Length: 355
Image (cartoon, rainbow, N blue to C red; front, side, top):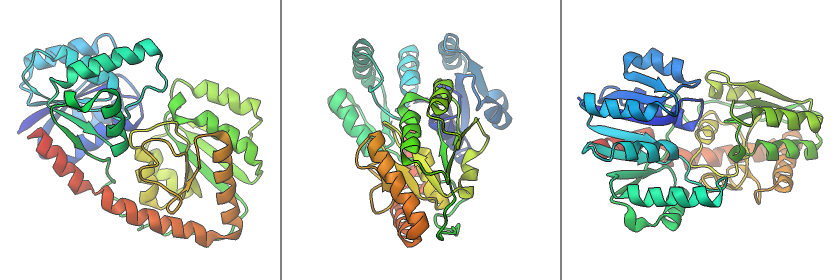
């Protein structure tokens, strides 16, 4: 059995950690999995599953743990997850002949300064030559990478979409789409700038719908700032719950899901939202607009507070007056995503890459 080492910068709750969790479960009979990353909220869950095959450290020690694992373990594949792990990990393993696979999980420079952006582009161009396969999770992500880094530096590339949970069938959960006045919305995701929670809070303020409540689940570096903004806007109907285990399982308890991101790779929460049949209100961010449109979601016309406000007003009005419009969008989204994000098809791509 081949051994795959997954190197991820942080084991905090988020798409990268969730992706590693899925792979180590869904491919557990095909490969031995070792996971290395900085300690975080996902650590206990992975420890229960992987035992001594989980290695944790901090941002300073994990590169050296990686080096030790390369020298002491018989590795067949090193799979780097995320931009930071991709740069540091490929630099530290450049001497090794082990197959190197790199999944970017949201390639973007929107929040970087000019120097940091130029530095990362330089590293990506240099390291692409020694990377056996670069995996993109969406076509939009690949398009941006080609534009910024250049496709001529890439040895081999594949698009491998995030896929649906095996325990769910799309459309299997019947939702009660009937007219109502009291509406419960939910946001699940990292509390960081790119996730657009500040845009969401300002939109909720502008909607001015006293019967609309919003639960926000997740943790991250901007959590306290978003809480402060909520207080300043006097949004008593918005409640921050922090990290919640298996938060996606709560989606069916809510009327609709917000995805207000500034940019994405291909958000897991979108797939999970479609899986349970919950209406989605979202921004037209990269990594979202490739899959969601006006036929299958309440997508804003542009990435702005005003546009997200308008989309939110439409869905709240539909809940009161036109629930059939919501049901129509749910039917459309299930048809689109059930074909595109087939689990077996995506895992087959990964097996081809690993082998």
